[in-house]
Image 1 (cartoon, rainbow, N blue to C red):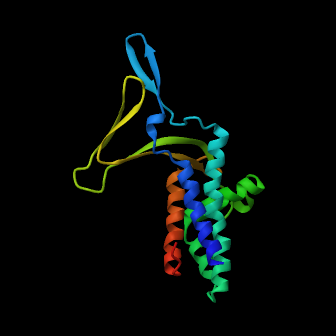
Image 2 (spheres, helix red, strand yellow; image 1 turned 135 degrees about the vertical axis):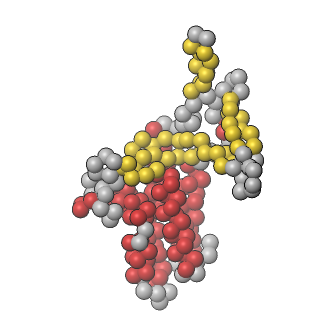
Image 3 (tube, helix red, strand yellow; image 1 turned 60 degrees about the horizontal axis):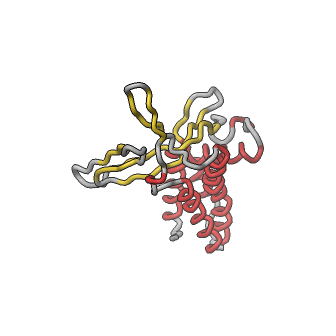
Length: 201
């Protein structure tokens, strides 16, 4: 059972890895020449279709959401009251939002009683963006430009990668937050819980 749970956890990270692109040099921007001006258009989508990006997003969503049932089985089989899994879930807004998005995909929208989050969240405008992060050292700087052919070039001591994200909105079409940030926080909340019950992976 533990091997099955570890496999499930690793699938979450595998789904995230598939959503990211670190070889940014292959994502060539489209040159725009307008009279005396020269620029570039870059949406970071690469060769992915809208449907492919949606599938990748819901692979992340479903893998995070499905971990709850696996954890309830694991705790029960190890003599632990599985209500602690429910408590972790109920105390995490990101986990409830991710669960609602997963349920939307399975059962349709809108969810009953606005779902676990009570916001009836909906994922829209799925796309990819460049994420630049300075290194965790004083004075670190990272920046990006394009060469004359539209190839992105990153300078500095930070990290670079293209990530998948989107807008999560509520039933009134108000933005709840960024998909990548909410999914990352949901994973972090599960990680804290896994550490508390002694699961190493």
